[in-house]
Length: 218
Image 1 (tube, rainbow, N blue to C red):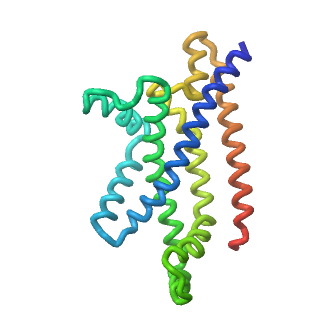
Image 2 (image 1 turned 90 degrees about the horizontal axis):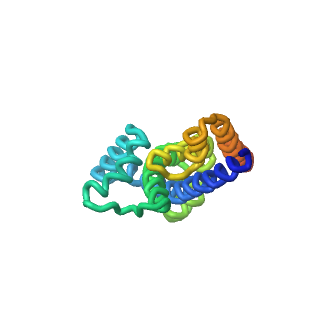
């Protein structure tokens, strides 16, 4: 029985890891785009972006996931997501990416604005272009400032992947809970927690290493 549960949880972990990686792959660059949009000098764009971010951050991720997965089928008369596991994972990644991009954008914006304006002005005096100033002056210092809050959000993402079970995606929590439903046993739930703890533990060690590497900014 233990091996059966382990195999099932490993299958669920693979889906959890897939959702996690794909979400970061899309949410990180999208969050930077959202940050620049919210900082735009063109007021209609900045106000619209700030409104979107406020709405996404102010409503539950579970609600957003349900709307994204079921909404198109109700509005358009046909489901844009395939009925299989791949469609459920795709909907999950879309919902998670947009949600986390909004959270990341606030962190990115704070990191960018925390870099003293005098340093950007110094770059202009030296004849650097705007892109050179951003990548060689602003970005490097921003990374140091955003790593701690970003690490918290990314660790939260690991646990939020369990919300995918609301649309029947076979992720880690779904795999553990299935034994409680079918066999009436609870120990697989605690065993599931061990998988999450190991996942989070590895990420914690990774972020601690990154923070040590960035100490040269002190």
